[in-house]
Amino acid sequence: MLVSILNNIFLFSMPGGGELILIIVVVLLMFGGKKIPELMRGIGRGMREFNDAKNNVKSEIEEGMKEKETKQQLPQQ
Image 1 (cartoon, rainbow, N blue to C red):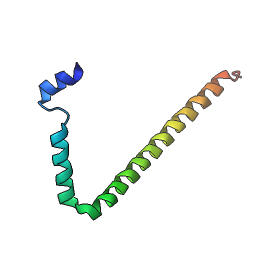
Image 2 (cartoon, rainbow, N blue to C red; image 1 turned 90 degrees about the horizontal axis):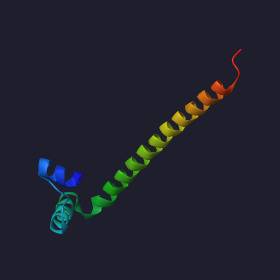
Image 3 (tube, rainbow, N blue to C red; image 1 turned 45 degrees about the vertical axis):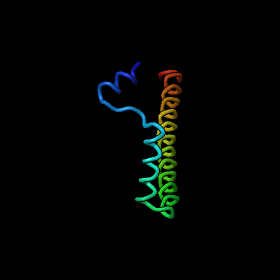
Image 4 (cartoon, one colour; image 1 turned 60 degrees about the vertical axis):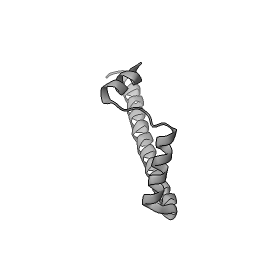
């Protein structure tokens, strides 16, 4: 339901088969066959770095929460 509302508001939808083929052809023409593997490697590296950073932030937050719990459990003097 939300997707159909967004489609009506923004006047766009997911590309179909014909549009995907057109996009692939345009990418091949722009970058050429030799540049595409380099482009994909770069995208993969960027995604990997993003996920590593996200996991680091998540683990730091979890460690901070555990430290706060242990401080609260210790008797106050």
